Image (cartoon, rainbow, N blue to C red; front, side, top):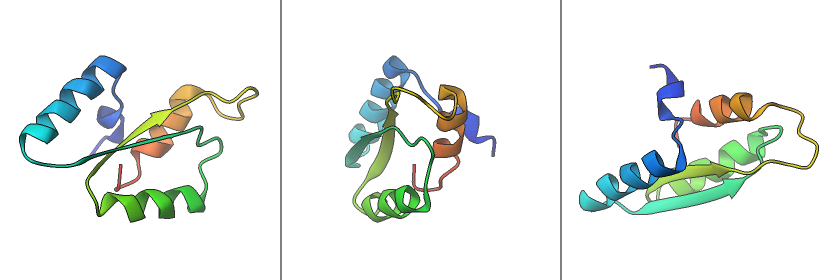
Length: 81
């Protein structure tokens, strides 16, 4: 699976969340910089994934190490997101 298909803009994410809610699924919204993405982040996202469908909202740090696209791709590659 090309995980880049999991990367959504705000409007598409709202629509996807609404679809998941209509199926009776709980939405878990997690916000973070994920710059860099650490094993600690992956463990935390895995732990909340048991409670619902995880949507990760990426914020931009003041001096990013990675581009927004790279951070989005790495985060989307996690099974729990």
